[in-house]
Amino acid sequence: MPLNGIAWKRKKYGLGKARTVKKFLRTFGIDIVAQKVEHHMCRFVGKPMNEMFLAHRRENGMGVDYDQISFEFRDPEVYGKSWDTGNADDCCEEEEEEVVEEQEEEEEGVEE
Image (cartoon, rainbow, N blue to C red; front, top):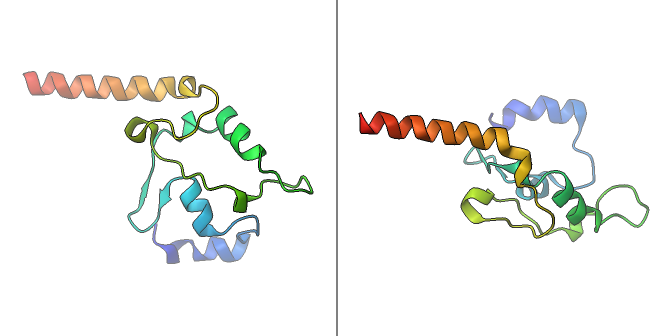
């Protein structure tokens, strides 16, 4: 969706002040120029993300201080795990099974 397509949402809901849009997009692997997102985010969201981000809580306890975070999510299938806490591999089992099935179907089609 082009940036101007979301302008009304920005106006209606606001962006908040916890982080800039640029910081949000980089942190969570979203490239709006190329209109691409990094895949397999579910391997990071949950315990690994909480452990990493909660170490950077604001002094007042009201959320995460994103100025202290330099992490940028990248697809672990391509770049490996870019975080080093917990084992988040189990959360994508269904998604991975679907990908494997699709790959097997493609390979069968090539063999025929």
